[in-house]
Amino acid sequence: MNATLEFKLSQLPESPGVYQMKKAGEVIYVGKAVNLKNRVRQYFHASRDHTPKVRAMVANIDDFETILCDTELEALILECNLIKKYRPYYNILLKDDKQYPYIRIDLREDYPRVELVRRVEKDGAKYFGPYIGATVVRDVLETLHATFPLRTCRHEFSFGHGMGGRHRPCLRHQMGLCLAPCTGNVFPGQYRQMLEEILAFLNGRHEDVIRGLRAQMLEASKDLQFERAAQLRDRINAMEQVLQKQKALTVSGGDQDVIAVSSDGVDAVVEVIYLREGKILGSDNFTMQRAEAQEQESLSMFLLQYYDNAPYIPREILLGEPVEELDVMEQLLSEKKGARVHLLVPQRGDKKKLVDMAKKNAEDIAAKRREQFVRQRARTVGACAELAKALGLDFVPRRIEGYDISNTQGTLSVASMVVAIDGQPARSQYRHFRIKTVVGANDFASMAEVISRRFARGERERLEAEKEGRAPDGFADLPDLVLIDGGPEQLRFAQDAMHSVPMEKYPAMFGLAKRLEEIYLPGREDPIRLDAHSEALRLIQRVRDEAHRFAITHHRGLRNKRSVASRLEEIPGVGATRRRALLTHFPNVEAIRDATMEELLAVPGMNRPAAEAVYAFFRAQ
Image (tube, rainbow, N blue to C red):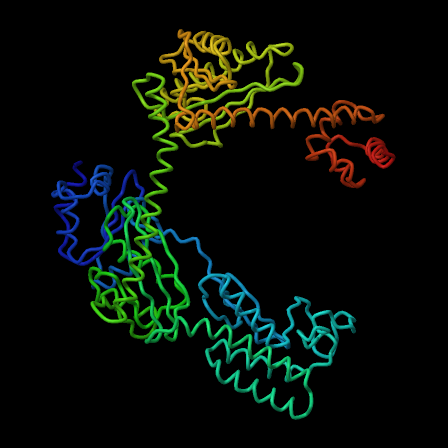
């Protein structure tokens, strides 16, 4: 512990507040406390009782700051705001990239549309939702459009002026699905009357709407308007079908959220079941990152972060287990809602059954995540460990690089370098090389050139990074293991090239021959054959195939570009400089072919006669 920390610990007040743990000026954790002195000192004086995550955090702390508050509620609100602002690494953070669907109706329009949107804007429109899943919203919209002849087009028009001179209605009107306000035959008042029924339906007054439709159906039948009566009958059936689905999910109670949490050992899974007016609308699950097994803390942090941005807070929230300072959390949520919110931990009855249902779902998702994590680890880090054992290495390789050569009868030779870090592709680290010194189709010499260039530059940049006291990156991040696509001869050329570069430490290298998938090691005649189902073999096959794909893709691009350049050579008045300018300015030959005169003249170095020659050449073809 440094002197700054010791002094600040001695000056801590016995007051409610928030503390920010820092490393090199960056906030790495935010917490709240009823008594700052007791809470903050615990981190540094009771390390044996801490979880591994907390011990790792404390080891990184070089400073902290505190903010005093008058009440626990103030501290809770401030903690929420600071976590949202800094998103500190060691806090349990809600990973929520979901955008829930809403139904939007802009009542300011003469003929409003009913549409699905993903975001609530402060635009004066009326929003209904959020709905749990777009499928639910689409079912509702389908029912509304089948029941009410609403307009769905996005055309703008005003009553009495038509729609840009349009007089004929569209096909939807002919099918009886739209009143066609674009024709000017429907007054806004008539359209608004239909809209009132839609608003009533969306507000939950379903029976009133159906009762009104039945009355219209009977009236149409009495007037011998049987087609109209049949349409109304179908609309009533469509509405009742949607309502029947909801009735099957009805439980006692009003608006409730039911929340339970389960840990997968790394993160925590939070399951939320939504009930509105006693109907189960659906459920959703969320991930609390870096939660380890702290389920109670995960639940508390979920309530704090989720309801900070939630568009709706129900009056009752059922929890799978109690959270710390439950009464303070209740007070905070009540303030956000503007009405009393109750946090309950039911022990029996129907509410307990709902909580058990949420808990069971959370545990099921957490178990599947654990299985997925185990499988993923076996394919990546586990495969690296298995490969190290097969190759006789005394370390597990972190960075594996794979190389391949591609050319067409010795022309446009290129090489690829692909990278896997901890068994996973690091695509931002991939590199291409143009072969500079080798003439013709000599893959051995080409590989030797690439390997020597890569390691010469890598060692030079590594020494520069070491001198400047920074972590090596790019080419300076040297591999632990190098995979050469080929057998013993390719491997020998590559290893000789690498050893021609003076280096402090040389990485291990091996070759993978494709015909029998045999592994060749330097100085060993007999190849190694791995089990066809081993994760180590699958890993090096992925690296080898990725190197092959990356090399061929780049080579094909160069070949296409040369083909374009050769076509441009046929154009009189367009020399090498202007050809390069065209190929740089336009992405492909199709773009050059379709370019207008103005676009061709915009190319640097292009004058009007040259532009006209290019334009005429492609038009003639």
